[in-house]
Image 1: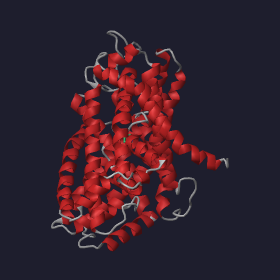
Image 2: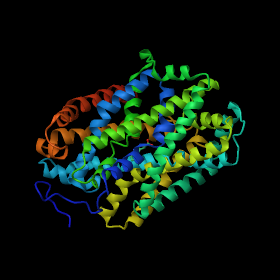
Image 3: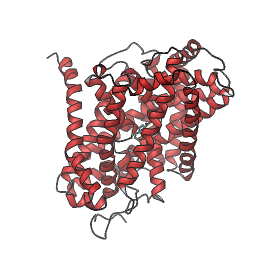
Image 4: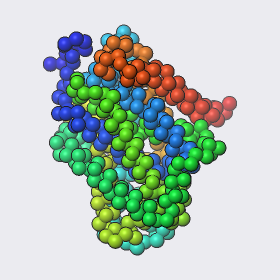
Length: 466
Ligand code: TRP
């Protein structure tokens, strides 16, 4: 039975049961956080935004903004124990505000759908690269050859559409069956294996002779290169990589056992996710400089540097295949988190079965995905606002919807929810609670607002011809 009580002994329970352990929750959230965002997106965005200063702002965003937002999402999710839309409505009412907070959940559902529409396309590239690696296409290839393999593949929209379809199809299959043991097992194996392979590649990068250059690019801040737009990109990347701002972590938090420490779990996830992103940068940039590639090269960056490195290693074809297989696992566990809010909402709101919900949402995402499939071929030069269709969806979701969602979520947890409710979820009014509350009430919202306003205002001004 679903109980409406949230206080005292009569805590609500989730319809879908609970994670078997604290470790299971940490793994699920880490699985959603660690994905293409760490290994594909972080290096190329850092490259496009000039490196060092961007990376530092990103790290500040992760700690001062990402961590409090993540804690807020988990505590709201655990208290509401429903899908994000229903949870926000329920708690909005219970905390004496309004049901209309449900729109924050609704925006999250939409953001997840839009993000997955292009995430699946890039995950499709990864699947194709498994095949290319296994057949030895990169063996001994030069930088130019690797670049043209990437351009030819992404320019072939039919091949990309097929890969996108395979990735969405498999995702729908898993979601339809519910989050199975098999997946938890896959994550349990995948994250450590990915880490080991990254370390092997790090060894290779260190020996490339350009490690110092890569290190300097990542960690020497040239502040004059930093625009408000880069700061917004860093904030957006912090939200994207931690899977926060769209209710996915809220949905996972709904299955978290009462006694688990939210602070501890958040800290573990944030540390693992940031560590893997930094490691990816330390692998990619030395290879970029060693091979005369352009760090600002955009979405193709890892698809060019890694095959190049593997192509020159002994046993490279095998390593490359294993690496892209692991990366597709990482993408897959993230995709599950991206659809969870939408699927949970459709199940609870329209009384559909999980399978029906997965197919409906999957089909919508698949169709929207064609905008991104074609962004690298037929619609390459079709540009408006932030660029081609893919670039617009990415900008809208990462740089606007996620920060805005995160802002509203922390304001809700910090200002709308009463002190007792949040202290109760965060294990009493001790030091961590006070630190969280200070951040969630003031630092985090003000920080997000400053960045959003400064970066977005000139765009709005230009758009309305002011
Ligand atoms: N964090 C994921 C990555 O880095 C992408 C992502 C963004 C995500 N929002 C999410 C995953 C929500 C799951 C749920 O690849």
